[in-house]
Amino acid sequence: MTSENASPAAAPTITLAPLDVDDAELLHAWWSEPVSAHELGQWPRPLSAVREQIERDIDDTDHDGFLALLPDGTPVGAAALAEQNMSDGTATVRLLVDPDHRGRGYGRAALNALIDLAFGELPLHRLETLPHTGNAAALALLARAGFTHEGIRRAACLHRGRRYDIAMLSLLRPEWEALERLRSWDL
Image 1 (cartoon, one colour):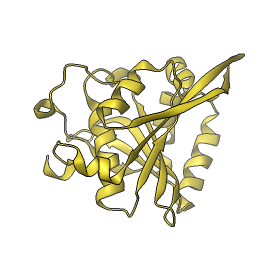
Image 2 (cartoon, one colour; image 1 turned 90 degrees about the horizontal axis):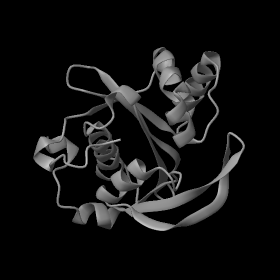
Image 3 (cartoon, rainbow, N blue to C red; image 1 turned 90 degrees about the vertical axis):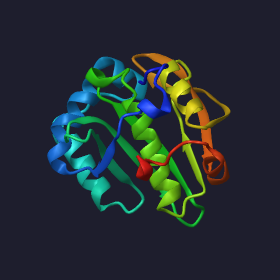
Image 4 (cartoon, rainbow, N blue to C red; image 1 turned 120 degrees about the vertical axis):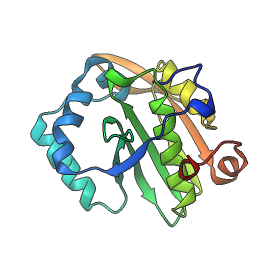
């Protein structure tokens, strides 16, 4: 998902733009790619279902989906704050990097931008995410972003006839505040 050797100074600039129904074909292609489908633990869905999901998410005040864009407007991934509960101050983080753009630091920049939005602009206190335990790239990225490993949901995902464990990770607002890195609005 990201380059292990990318220094903070070399981090690419990513802008988050709200998802629109017109983005369905792009997301459909990314979600249908076999490695991405496996890592996300979801079945590839028809394009019409992706469009319908985006429409529902746009209307859902508990879900904010974004395209991760380079400064020239090239989409390199998608990110979301899902299952937002403003009363409790919680949300679930989701991130997907375009398979053709992995290994360039875009995942890290997109994740940081999403975290900065959650804690810098919204009244959230806790972010959580649930990657497969075998998704080493995602686990490393999340650890570098400050997420803490909380536990394992054993055999919680069925994909292609096989059960997978899901890792539970979280990041709290005070932990984000203590991170020594530039915020996305400073880049």
